[in-house]
Image (tube, rainbow, N blue to C red):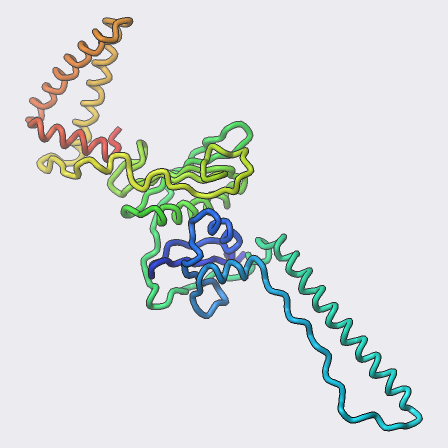
Length: 327
């Protein structure tokens, strides 16, 4: 089956995403696309503002009534068959009037039937191959769905998507990628009620906190509102990672596998110190804190001495581990 008709949307001379044309109004209401954006789909000869195309798609204008042809200025000759001529003229008028009425009814019915079977009719149309003119050429938003996790609640179907992107995107680009990821997800499970999207940069691991952004989709833009009657939309909760403010420097003299090993040793030593402190003073939190800090510092010093790390190098290594999700 050919792919559904797709609306290509550009803003400021750069493509921001592709959307099934039957969801264009929803994307417009949710603020994902703007009325001033330009768009194109198969069958159009040029890019036009979204406000023109989406309105035309959602409410096609009725055709003007067809006027009957003008009567001849020449009177009919007075003959024995003149009454037959008059009857024929009257029949022509009736036929023309019925034709206009049928045409209007057919067009009106087609409008209502189109609005209720949009997916089926538009799915038969091919998608464009290279719709962008020269002044709007740009790279597509590249992404990779790393994993899809069930996050169901009660009777509702919720999904958590972990997505890797090639570089840091802005809020509009994150929303566009989330819309495309959701479209892919609905092909496997069209019942999805809500979704959350964790974005990751290429150098980070995806088993921890997001590093490149967080987007929610659901009623009112919140993925916890499954039962709400609000229209569903996308909300960018964070346009970059939780550790984006940390230093990007690293300890160059150690390769990445060694740096990961040191970071994991630090985590293990902290967990061990915490467990020992709680076992010694199960009801005294102040004593727990003091013992934990003593054991943590001692373990940290052992690791520093073994790998010959300075305090600055250890700090950089810890920041790198947090930023790249070495958990």
